[in-house]
Image 1: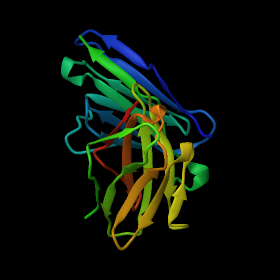
Image 2 (image 1 turned 180 degrees about the vertical axis):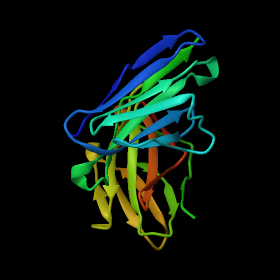
Image 3 (image 1 turned 135 degrees about the vertical axis):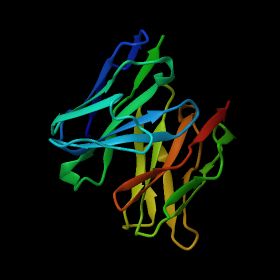
Length: 117
Length: 111
């Protein structure tokens, strides 16, 4: 089946540094990629939607200058958490819609656990 | 308005007994509905999906769900629980290409 690779799976960083998370669709082209954040014991919250070659669309309340999203190709999107602070510690998950299925199905990465000290 | 309600935040069953995870939805469009499972420290995995074909949908690992329009429900069931089923389950509504997530149900399996 379709696979979405997310890297790294776990990252620890110091407060004030930036962290980049990669999301790749390995065997399909993604029409759209999504970035979610999951707080402990809560459901996923959509942060932003990105289409290849265009600017990401951020959900209300998500700081676009803090969470930089780049979608350079149909198989790669990156999320950069700039000047990370402890409150940014969370589980970040990306997903990608499979172009060949008409974009109807999303496949998810395994997630990245970010811990900011 | 589009919404998904998972009626139980936790469900606890004994191994070998049936599982029922409840999900109700509200949608102005013809909905597509999904169940995803998330095991501890793992990513989300698609269990099954309903996209306006058969109302009884069979998924992986012995799970199935029935779409009932009259009840606006899409409950997830399994005849016999296994210890490996312990995880969090999310009911998701895809309405006009917008994903709306339920809050999740944690399934606990007692030996």
